[in-house]
Amino acid sequence: MNFPLIMLIALVLTGAVWLFEIYALKPKRAAGSKEPLLVEYAKSFFPVILAVFLLRSFLVEPFKIPSGSMMSTLLVGDFILVNKYTYGVRLPVINKKIIEVGSPQRGEVMVFRFPKDPSLDYIKRVVGVPGDRISYRDKKLTINGVPLKMERQGDYSYVKSGLNYVTATQYLETLGEHVHQTLVQPDAPTIRFQDVGTFPLRQNCDYNEEGFTCTVPPGHYFMMGDNRDDSNDSRYWGFVPDRNIVGRAFMIWWNFDSFKRVGQSII
Image (cartoon, rainbow, N blue to C red; front, side, top):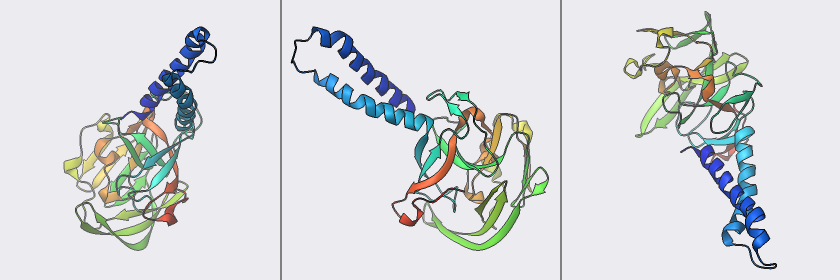
């Protein structure tokens, strides 16, 4: 569902009804007569729709986490807020950048439109920016030849869909200026080769039994989930173009199962 488009259509329709009332209906209506019900509704809803449309388009937008690919940073059921202007001001619906503000940096958590189906919103961590050479071999991430610092934190257990119980090793990883937690399942393969698909600029990547190496092309980003062995990310469907960027995730504003998570910053 293209919610921004629906909001824009509703905004145009209610605004048109209101203007039609002002310039066409009201001058011809007898003094003291009641406005049509449709006009009353349009006048009531137009300011509300306008406020929500502007807020979601240019300031912040709410999202709900649907999967465990970003555990333990983000959990299923977390409701988060996304900053819409950190990476530039974009026109709603067509998502065209009109004002340059900033660009995604390594380690930031970003919401973007899934390259293979832009109607879907995905959330992952920025691992590679344009020009970076990303290697992931034997469960170890290297950027431009420099291995990331990882400190083991212990075990982390959770239940997947289908009531599968998973025990992973939790690490504290330093990526750019961000220190965050990642999960690695020791017995899982480094790459699920059966899930690696064809994607634009696939020639920038080299896969083998130990893992992969990719060079991030200009205007694109390489994204990975914090739950490394349970994430569908750039390893499998490729790079995220700048035009698909939605914004930077910065806060958990609600979780029905854990009130302690409310208000937590996303790092």
